[in-house]
Length: 203
Image (cartoon, helix red, strand yellow):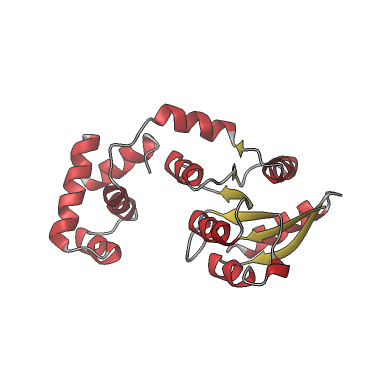
């Protein structure tokens, strides 16, 4: 029996996934958490630890990849499956760099989720084929981490001043990062830069 912990801040999705996985004879969902912080607190007790963790990428506080990294510090070789509604090459690269074995879109079928869990539990990778192909074709991003961060915020419609506050940067520094990012992607403004970077799979 493979024991599983799920963390997703969308309660309905977490509950539905738990129900579907528990229908499998060899899978047993032991705990469902609503955030990265909650699962990290739960994990402090050794008796709570499970074979596999299924983590939503976009958790409300600490995200799924950072949560996985902290869990794996306490439990080396822990099998982790990241699930997401917005799969992007950059996030897959982050996950692979963190030694996470599985990465799957939430649009996957129940059978695909079950297969992915069995695969990562066996110590093998399970990556969504379409995202893997997109990641390969995207190539290396020319953007720095800070440039990616300010472009992501620009994509939310924030002004330069609001981006500076959200990114904890000085306004002048923020404008420099935006200008550098625009130049690298060949865009006339920050919104166009965000769109182009998204299309290239860099955000």
